[in-house]
View (cartoon, one colour):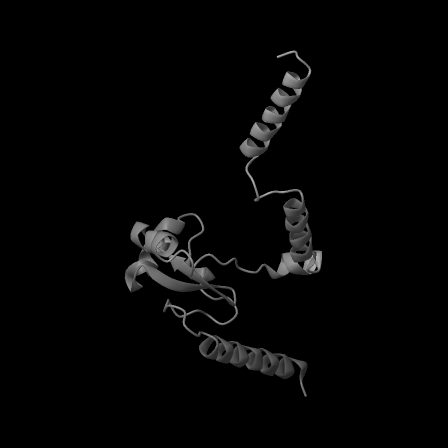
Length: 152
């Protein structure tokens, strides 16, 4: 078979798989402009004037989905949408996205290091009492010791 034909068929199969994955993997994310396979909506966003680009897309509503490459990104456009998400429904939006490049670079060490740090800080008393309580207790002990030595 001719290498050009094989290359074309491979690209076409990759394109079909990409389209199928985008349609089936949407779940409960908001609607947005139709993305291009592999590129997503990157060509629809003007990097020099992002505000205008998002305003053009926001005719779909204040909450919409843009695909940056093959990764869906939910966009909140406008004060009311951001306020509702962060204030009124803050618990639902409190998660953190994953960054595959960073996860591959540190090989999952971030979560373990964070857990160790929190455990160590708790063992030193962080979160149990405020520093003001500790200072007041130590000051009280110092005053008592000074009274015992007849200096006070």
